[in-house]
Length: 319
Image 1: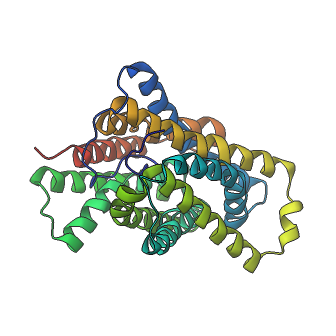
Image 2: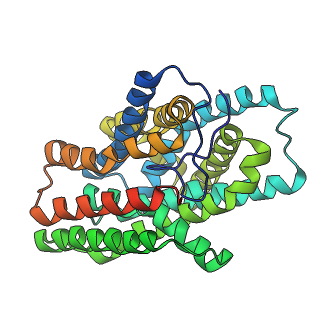
């Protein structure tokens, strides 16, 4: 597995230059992998909300997800270390990996899972899909990078779209919608900080090793968090449905889409893989309608269209 840019949940970071395919010649398989990765990532919200219906809470579901995924990421780290002469992990990099794992995988995931208790899966997906816009804003404020005019318009369109989808959730009712939206937005912000901070490290360590190491760090934080607030034996006393859902969450919605998206970037390049990933929010609407029974409204559809247009514009390279 060759190294690629760090792969976020939904789309590629805007601060990473578009990468040409490193293994061309398999376009259709690359398209299939990119679509699978986006749809599988979007299924995470569906599985979490199903877990809530069986009485599990956010930290329990997150701990189970990490426990399932950790062995696979350990294998990824071992695989990537075969090229260890090229990607040396410096002493300072270790602390950076800890910080990145805390921000990008533990904190972002916990805030996301917590927010899903209050809002629909579709609204959660749209808010997370704003991550590239947050990367752009962080770059503007921290690094004084001047955005293109079309990117500013795209930011406005994206956030208007989220506002429309947010209005849909308010219309159908429910407690804590504002809190849930805030938690998921903070999740997206935490992951955006990870993307901005990972550029220097991924150049030395490699995307696969960084993903594997940061995920292992996050698993440690998740397990520690769980042990601080729950007795350890409560993990053994859950409904069997929760274990089945967590197995799916850790494999089908975590490990497999990461590998699929990385491979798609190798075969298609980051620009096309990112564009194909836009199917994620659309698939969430369909899955939430049929598997969760969440209502679908005109404002939600309109908001989704605006967010997709805005994010597509933001992630296009500036010529």
